[in-house]
Length: 339
Ligand code: NAD
Ligand code: DAU
Image (cartoon, rainbow, N blue to C red; front, side):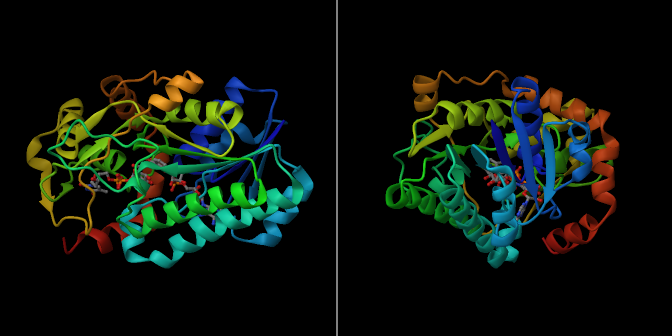
């Protein structure tokens, strides 16, 4: 079986490649990644020498490149992780998000139609459901929750989801979609909340918390997400959407304070800054469907996952320090200096 993994040099895609290489070593893994600022080829170094692994640098929205790769590899399964993934960047430059996240999805699915695949799996997000109020803790996103997006990022992901379902109904493409809550773990790019706070706390720099820090995210350790995607792409029903989450809701302030405690750093590092425009209040996933149909359950709770994650950032300073030493400095200055 050949599995084409797009966006495999990013955070979740790379964790997924490692997960598959370990659990299903008989399968051939092909990674297509444009190596944008978020893609890091050095992450994939442990896989590069393997016989049944191939890396191709290319853009999912480039039909010529995608067509050639499909002609060469004839993948059985395509898993699309490739995306512009950071909400704050989508507020700065929506157009790039529409191109990659919507047109890239279309380009991949057109190749799937042309060459035929057993499954096209779209890695989506709980952000397509919008947000939940803080004062209704009993509410959770189910697969029936209406799409109701807040940011250009989530709107682009929702558009892609609609296109995926349309390709199933109109062309009979064997698709599935998973919508996961916030991931954390190794190789998380240090612009996102958890790695940003770990890296800045270690340098005794201020920790920018948006608004009052009361916003809630439902955190899932990345390996649990990888296991869930594997279950859906191999055993999930065609044409279906599966929510993925592990009931690990925490406010942003709780997360930041947990990191500070673990690193022995003072809470005086916290700096409340201007809120993100359109900031979603609360995400919470109801994972009943994936549990009942596919038997998936998360293995890592937040307390042990955050401890493992902090340890990983301590043990792998070179990985993130190299990122922080490059262009990222300009990004941080631009996004945070007037907040
Ligand atoms: P990431 O930003 O860390 O990685 C994205 C990867 O896609 C990078 O390697 C980048 O080089 C590549 N890429 C970007 N544009 C490309 C293009 N045009 N062609 C080919 N490759 C391209 O993202 P992530 O956090 O790993 O997220 C992966 C997927 O999971 C995304 O689709 C995202 O929407 C979804 N998701 C993320 C989370 C989360 O918490 N991070 C949660 C749920 C769903
Ligand atoms: O829910 C899934 C989504 O989770 C994915 O689809 C996205 O790709 C992923 O980036 C993530 O989106 P969020 O916007 O929730 O993640 P982020 O790490 O950017 O922010 C998490 C929370 O922390 C959010 O409420 C905003 C807040 N925040 C973030 C940053 C970067 C801060 O308070 N300060 C910051 O500097």
